[in-house]
Every structure is written in structure tokens, then in C-alpha cells.
Amino acid sequence: MVFSSLLFLFRFFPAVLLLYFVPPAILRVFGRRGRGTSPECDDDLPYRNVVLFLTSLVFYAWGEPVYVLLMLFSIAQNYAAGLAIARFQRVGKRGAAKASLVLSLILGIGCLGYFKYADFAVTNFNLLLGHIAPGVCIPLPAVTLPIGISFYTFQTMSYTIDVYRGTVPAQKNPITFGTYVAMFPQLIAGPIVQYKTVEKELSCRKTTREGFSSGSLRFAAGLGKKVLLANAIGLLWDSASGSLASRSNTQPSVLLLWLGALAYTFQIYFDFSGYSDMAIGMGRMFGFHFLENFEHPYLSASVTEFWRRWHISLGAWFRDYVYIPLGGNRKGLARQLRNILIVWALTGIWHGASWNFLIWGLYFGFFLILEKLLLKKALSRLPKIVGVLYTFFLAVISWVIFACEDLGTCLSYLRGMFGLAGLPAVNDAGLFALSGYAVLFAILFLAASDLPARCYRVLVRHRGGRVLVLLAMAGILVLAAAFLVSDTYNPFLYFRF
Image 1 (tube, rainbow, N blue to C red):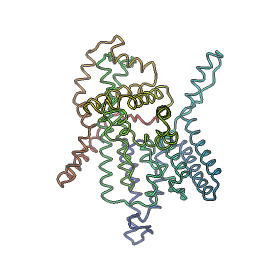
Image 2 (image 1 turned 180 degrees about the vertical axis):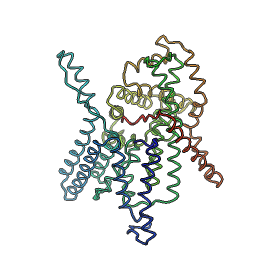
Image 3 (image 1 turned 60 degrees about the vertical axis):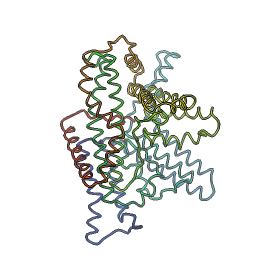
Image 4 (image 1 turned 135 degrees about the vertical axis):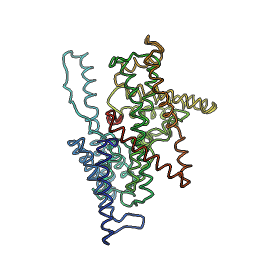
């Protein structure tokens, strides 16, 4: 089940809202209030956490009925590890606490490694084995990737590490901990919510009309990004990549391939940032305040800035739990450059078990190092628009590497883009795509800028402006629902991660 589906929008989510809000409201009417911990906390948080936990399990089991057991195992072992670490530290047994942490990390990384990378590892081992012992081949495990395992594994790891560091206390309530891990708004596509950022709200949060209203608006905006923008432009990428792979009758050209690359550049942004907006919006409805995950990344004037604005929660995770523990920038330039390469190799592999993801990660690592050594000062002296165009160009190339899982296809596409594959510069298919998508591209460029956010901030200062915002969001919901009813093209790019 995905957020941009009629099943979720008109059945599952309304049912969750009813279960979450209506029974406590009925109890208040009859004077049977829960025991609130403070005026800042809802009275019925234990009940509401149970609702979130159980409905999240239903949400996950809808598409992955078997792998919900894997997620429950992850919840149980990390919950037990947190308690064990805290108990051993309390009695001064640092070695036992560290052993508990290491065991928990091995189990988490082991599950992630098996389900995500087993087939990739065996395939490449067989290629190597074929040169040594021709005819010998290890059967593939043929493991299905559980949805969202990369996200919830990183979340549970952040919890046990922070308990060991003393950053947060161990969570003693298993339902509360299960709610943190399984919470459906951020379960399958992030943002990666570190436990320390929501620890207090798991036990004390307040749902308000203002929070519910702002969350609803954020959800509507995210749904519009996903359905009205990402889905619409994604068709062009499919057409362009299909033309090169002979999957359609469309004839490729340099123009068509560049338009396809631009299309994917916007598709992945509006797809993923749209889902993040929906997750943040639903979190606000339930009283949570998840951190932002995107901040207009295509306005960045350097690759360094780009990765402070794109998938912020992933960058923060690798910074806090890999880069800084490796020494960060504290042990000399050579160690710092090594740490950058390690982080970006891991960032690439985290996205998927394929060589293109590793190359994609190292591609960004290379330009981050290049900026640190040479380009940073030069870029700072140039007009900002030069840096923005430089960064956007590199981003477009990176998304071709990211999207083409087969390295041969990736090289063919890049060669075609730069006129090295004998393709015509312009043909009828390219001109038709340019004329057909010109208006949509203009909308995408504007929507990816900070102009919508600035307009929103101006409008909400005035009552009439707030009414316009509400009407606009209502219109987006109606249009998105209409598109979902009439259109079968509704991919979710981050489902495979």
C-alpha cells in the first residue's frame, strides 16, 4: 500500500484517523478522561500509540504479509538490546554493554545484508568463479527485498547506538518503541527518523487543530507533487530510456535523451520529496514533528550544498553514525578524504544492490572532494547562478547513473546524450516531446524553486490568503484523486530501497 493510492486515501487513512481521534473524544464527552502527564500532553497517548502501532502493522502487512515478522523481529531485538545496554551501563559493565550493542548491530546489518545484497553478492561471486572454475555456479538465493527495510534498519540502529552513547534513555515500553519503528507515515520511504528527535513526543505530545490543519495542507502538497508532477513527467523518462533500449517505436536523439534525463531529475525529486511531505504532514496530524528531508536542492550552488538539502535525514544519519565516528575532519586532510569516500560508497550501496549505485555514490564523493580541494573558493567568487547551473548539470548526469541499473545501458545513454553514439541531434520524437512537455517543464522548474514556499508564507499572513491556500490544497486533492482514478501510471521510485 502506498500513500498515493485510492485504497490508502479513501479507506485506510480515514479509518486510522477515526480510530485515533474518535474513541478518546467520546470518552471526554462522557467525562472519562485518561490520566495526562502534563497540560502539554494528550490524555490518551497509550491508547493512541497502540492504534498507531497496530494500524502500522496492518499497513505493512498489506503488501508484505510475511515480512511483517521480520520487522517485528527487528523491533524485539533492538528493544531488548536497548534495555540490556542500559542495564549493563548502570552497573558499570561497559564491556557487556558494548557486546550487546555489537550483537544488535550485527543482527540488524546481517538481516539488511542478506535480504538486500545476497543475490548481488552471489551473482558477482559466480562471475569471478566462472574464470577460476568454468561450469561451477552457486544457485541464487532469489531473496525478495522487504519494503522499507533500509529505512527501519537505520532507525533501529540509531536507537541502540544513542542508548549506548547515553544520548537517550532506553525505552521501557515495547508498544512505544514499536510505534517508533513501525509508524506507517515514515515506514517505507522515510524520512529516516532518529529516535532522539522524537523520543519526547512518543511519550508526550499534543494534537491540536493547528497541527492537524498544517499537517493536512502539507499532506495535500506532497500528494500533488507525487501524482500531478512526478507521475506526469515520469512518462517522458520511460519514453526516452525505452527508445534507447528498443522497448518502443520511438526513435532516440540527443534532444530526446536530454529531455528524458531532465524528466527523471524532476521525477525523482517530486516523487521522493512528495512522499516526505506526506509523511511529515501525517506526522503533524498525529502530533509528531519530523525533521525536514528536502530544502529546494536544485537551488544549490555546489554539490556540497546540494547534499545539505537533498535527503537530509540520510545525510544526517551517515554524518552522525559513520563520518564522525571515523574521525570526520579532525584527523588531517588525508583521513578526511578517506572518510568522505567511505561514506559515499556506503551511501551508494545503501540505495541498492547494483554497481550503478556504488558508482553513483562515488561520483558524488569525487565531486565533494574536488570542491573541498579546488572548486569551493572558485565557486564562491562566481555569480551564484553559475554554481546553480554547475550543480544542476552534475545532478542530471548523476540521476542517469542512478536510474540505469545496467552499466551498459547507462554508458549508452550518457554517450547518446553527449553525441557520441551516432544519434541525430534532433528528430521528430525529440521535437514532439519538447513541444508536448514544455509547459510542464516550466511548472516543474518553478515548483522546484523556493517560490511556492515564499508565496505560501505571504498568503498565510492574511485571512483571505489562508482561504486561497485552503481552496488550492482542496483543488490539488480533487485533481490528484481524479488522476489516480483515471490513470494506471503511479510508480513509486523509492519502493525498491
